[in-house]
Amino acid sequence: MFSHVMVGVNDLEVSKKFYDAVLGTLGYGPGFANNKRYFYRSPTGTFAITTPINGEAACHGNGSTIGFTATSVEQADAFHAAGVATGGTPCEDPPGLREGPAGKLYLAYLRDPDGNKICALHRPR
Image (cartoon, rainbow, N blue to C red; front, side, top):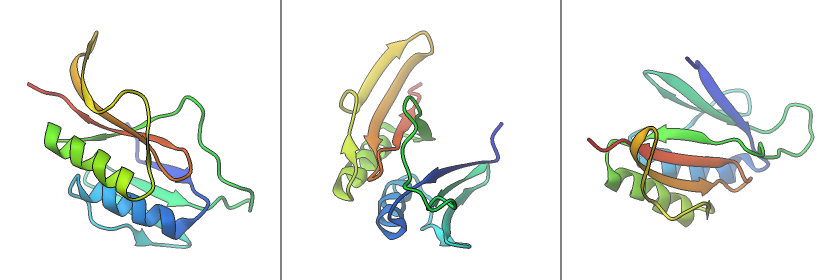
């Protein structure tokens, strides 16, 4: 459905360090630079970070979450730990299993250094 997701950040190098760490736990290589932005590519889409082109401060989307697929509970936990270690902030409940209308989900939520909410999601069998 989506070709890409891009979020605004205030310090491109601080955010690159954060996203290199968290996305590295999911098997993605370091972001590559292109026109003052960093891109993380996968076979199914692209995630990118950028400083706002209008020169104003970046801000997070209130109510927004970007979810990344994890292949295991351990991978989701590694994502969360790497994020906390590189300037992210835990948010919502601690990483763990939730059950709801969509079935069982293992979720690990963080806020990046600029307050963007992200999570790793694993669907146990």
